[in-house]
Length: 268
Image (cartoon, rainbow, N blue to C red; front, top):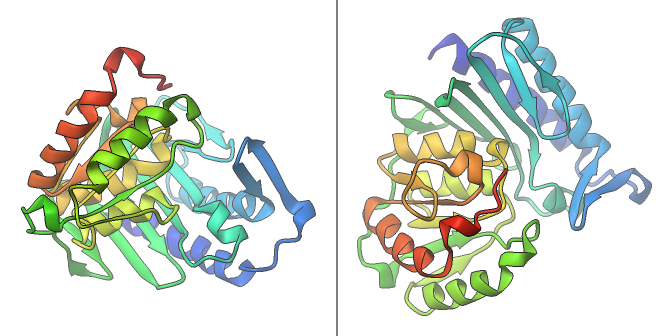
C-alpha cells in the first residue's frame, strides 16, 4: 500500500467512526438545504474537518477540494477530492447506506481511491495498476453478460431536473430489459458495489467529482469500464457517469446515447 492510500484509508476510517457515533443524533435545526433536496448537516462539515486535517498533516503541499466548501490551492500536481458524507439524506433518515469517499488525482488521472462504509465496516480501496480490494480481499466486476439477468443501479437527477423526462424514458427502457433496478442513494457505494460484482452496472447524472472519483477507479481496477454517457472519459467534469462490467457498460451506453445528447450537457 502506498503512503497516499494508507493516509486516505486512515482518514476515511476516522471520519466513518465519527459518523457512526453521531448517527441518529441530528436535530432538525442542524440540517441546512444547500439547494432543493440537497442537504448538509454539521456532521458533514465536522467529518470534512477530520479528513482535511489528516490529509494536510501528511501532505501539506497538496491541493484539496471537498464537498462542503473546503479548498486548499497550491502549485502541487496532486489534488484530493473529498466527500465526507456521501448519502447525507440517508444519514438524516437513519438509513444504513452512506459512506466516506476520498480520491487523489495527479493532474487529471485518479491515482488512488478509498470508500468506507462505516455501517457495514467495508473499506473499498484501489490504486492505479494495483487492483481493487474490499477489506483487503480482491474484488472483480460481475461476469454476467446476459443483460436480462443484470441488476442495475441508478440515481435520480434531483440536481438536474431538466433531464427528468429523458431520464424516466431511459429508466423505462432499461428496466424492461434488465433483471432489476436499485437506487440506494449513495453514488460512491453504487460504484463500489459495481466493482464488487453486486451490481452489473450503474448510471447517473448531475454528480460532482468528489461523488465518483474514488469509485470510478475501483470499477476500472476491478476489470470494469467507466465513461460518460457517450463513452468518453469526461465523467469527472460532466457529472454524467456509466459504469459496469464491459458487456453491461456497452449495453447501457446504447440506451443512454439515444436520449441524451452531448451538446445538451450541463456539466460544470
